[in-house]
Image 1 (cartoon, rainbow, N blue to C red):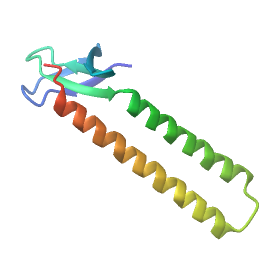
Image 2 (image 1 turned 135 degrees about the vertical axis):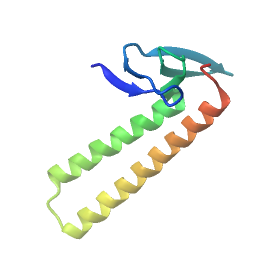
Image 3 (image 1 turned 120 degrees about the vertical axis):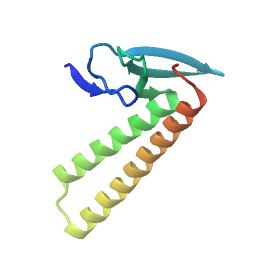
Image 4 (image 1 turned 30 degrees about the horizontal axis):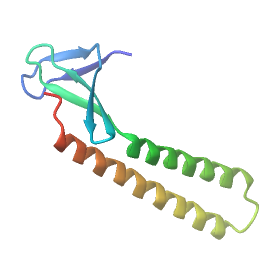
Length: 114
């Protein structure tokens, strides 16, 4: 799939043809950045940041989603009880997503793909 962008720095419209990858080491941890760049001014745009902690949290989020789907599929009890459990899952999932965003922001501040 080819996506179009407009560069924030030079205003050129371009197609994202290639996502580049860069690996950093943070002690024992590996930090992966995926980014693309403007063909005119070479401004870089980070599209994804990941490390083992983020991957672990994403697995937790997927497990919560599976738990939610199982509850919806197999629940036969009180609707209020179901709503309570679904709300708890949504809160846990939202908290985990915020944690991922915080970690990604910290990693972006610590490392540069420039």
